[in-house]
Image 1: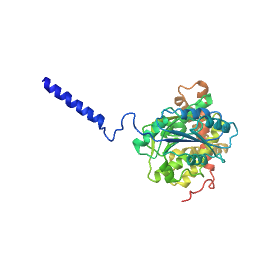
Image 2: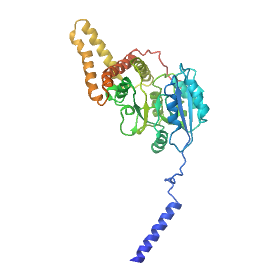
Image 3: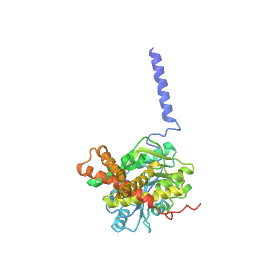
Image 4: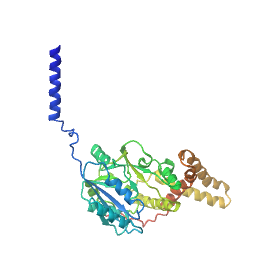
Length: 358
């Protein structure tokens, strides 16, 4: 029996030594894998408040590979340009390029052109990356074979109003069921927040369409999917997003988002669904109800009244855990988002945007 045990131990040793000396070609040696170099791109405009913090979150990434950061700076009204130049002077990994128009798609294309690596990670000036974000992006690209991967837009506010906006932006009542807002299982998606791309995919579709001042991320992902690529959502990638600080800023954001989402629908037929049509339909219904009520048809008031009741009622469960000051602002935030988006969609002129040149 003892001799059998010796033989078994010897065979186990031989098997172990062979595994160490000749590892499987599908399993890279621990700590010895090649990590692709990554270009992080960021279009920046009037981001004095958040730029330094956003840049620090990028440069301190726990990523074993090489990293560069390209900032495309628009004509800002604050100290954004000065801050960007100081950051670049302090760290050679930072490249600053001009974006004379100040528009997001122009800045994205300018920074892509100035970047050099095979993986391109998009970040916004008011977004904060967690330490493992770039590593998660690269690993997800490799595991899924997707052309673009992205995760959750984790809105977090500081003031009571921002807290209310953050809660609305992560609620189905506020933004529908898009996984990058509300979370969910990993899998293929129409679009994702920000995006981490293979450069080959960006080159295949010709970069961002600069006619799309807004909604350029959705439009880009549509073209990636139309050309045979895959867009992948993973909850593993979670980005802190700072929401708009006032009713006026929030209304402006959602008004223009609604305008440009209709442009995407015109340019790419069949891409509109009930989630996108719900806000404009609600606006039309409420306006019709008010007009009917003013002209003496009292049941017309049921439409705007019912909407108000639904928003207040929906704020009770979705506002759970918020400070009282934030909860009291939540119905206003929901209404601002819905109505602004819906009005923007309805008044979007046919001249806005144009077909992409073949």
